[in-house]
Image (cartoon, rainbow, N blue to C red; front, side, top):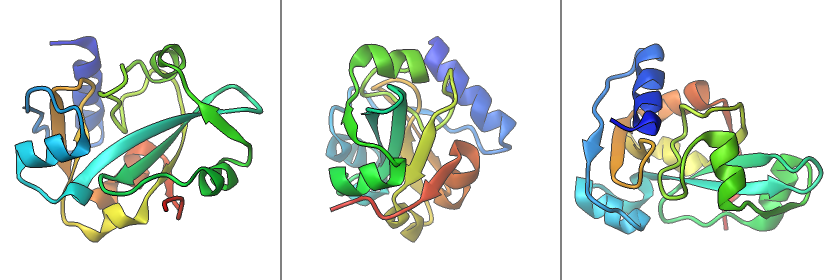
Length: 155
């Protein structure tokens, strides 16, 4: 088992959440992930990471699969202009590779915000540390386990 996958498993266990990590093959898009588990596109939790221009830190936006992050709204959430986060920053801050960034199990703390659309569902699916693995969860637990604050940042 990969270290990334193990960190997600441990974070789920520590939070007292069910551990139901599934290998869905390579899911390159949110639609691929939704198709593989048989859910609505918006039930996929996309982890979108930007670089805060003032600090250089990565910031995380957890959004519904069909939504896009609005750069101006996201900058307002972060309180700073945002730029593109490169693979090295994402790996250093979260410990995950692009395409497998989970909302939990990060190597280092990360400021995070949550798309309220995700709270419209009984269950959502998130990356479990690799581009091949996902896990289901009740979205009401997301703010607590990810420290993400619900906020409108989508277009």
